[in-house]
Length: 343
Image (cartoon, rainbow, N blue to C red):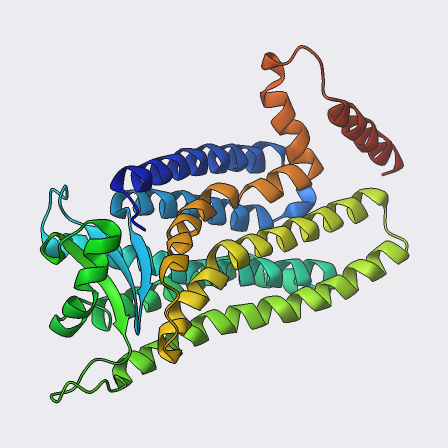
């Protein structure tokens, strides 16, 4: 099975178009239609959406193929039409790897903010002023970590090049002299041709795993505790508007977590881990290329359609193309009116 450059280009172009479209609309809605109660959560959402657009742009520039072969996983980029130097192409693919390190920390920070908001012990002050800059820096450090692994551990070397040469030609129609790649070859042959574990690659794999496990542990803990707080909020005396907003934000956050889990981290986690245990997932790794490109385009959809204020505003943007007002919009408007009367 071979992935054509034309199919890959179509995938990247479609992802870029929808990522820019949906995230731009969401940023507009956040700026103009957000409830006052959202506070600095608006800044976090804009940060996330801006990063998603940047992710999509870099993915379009690199147009990577992600693959697993035997004891090696790799992300490879064609340089046949690359107008700059090979070093600049290597930087580009490492930057794209770095984007993967930003995402889990962004999601974890969203969960922390939502828990602090539900907890109501004044800890949201840690997301104000100079503290907000600190939260913005954490995902960048996660990205620097992945960039560091790609640049220093997974760069081109003779043994890896020879090991993946045939599979790259068979699956992508590329010769190794017209590519750059980021690859982890767990068991390169020693001087006698006997496969031996490369401890530097194994250590880099541990670092990579920790950088994913840590934010996911935070998400699980904060998510479970937030669920408990949401139940108490719904059971006790809060105005309907506050209950609805908090519940909608929590639902959106949960959905925004499932998206990267199933589109990003499960396929990447399998891709990273299978070669270490001599599991060749082969053609299944093609899916990772598509999911990796799809994620930035679909990520803004949950918050856009679950939060009522954004959903109604989104309908209004397209009212000029409609002959009738959607029934869902009429119902949403009446609900918001009743809640505002109660407040």
